[in-house]
Length: 133
Image (cartoon, rainbow, N blue to C red):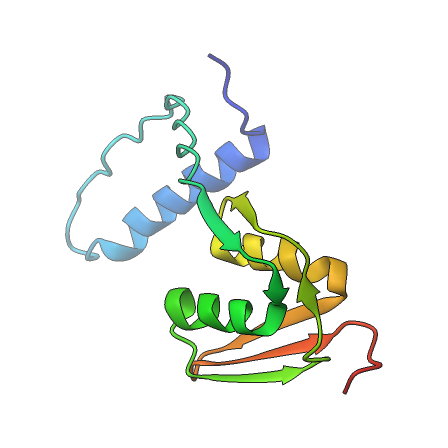
C-alpha cells in the first residue's frame, strides 16, 4: 500500500515533531524524542449510508403539510410563509430521501420555493423568483 503524502508533507510533519520535542523539553534535560512511525495506516472505511426517510404527502394544500413536517422533525415553532398559500400537492405520494432537508428541498424546488431554517426555532418559506414577497 502506497502513501499519498508528498515528500514536502513528510518533511513538514517530521520537522513539526522534532521542533515540538525540542521546544517542550527543559534546557537542562537531555531527553531524546520518541521515534515517529511513518507507516501508512490502513484507509478508514467510509461511513455507511444513512438511513433513508420517507415523506408522505396527500392531495391538497402544500403549506399545512410542510408546516407539519417542520414542526415534527425540526421543532419549528414559527413559520413565515412568504409565498402563495394556494400551492397544491396534486396526489398522494411517498418520497424517499437521505434526510429531511433533502426531502423538503425535493418537494419545494418544483414550486420555486426555498426554506430557510433559523436557530431560534423559526423558518421562512419564500419564493426563489422574488415575485411573492
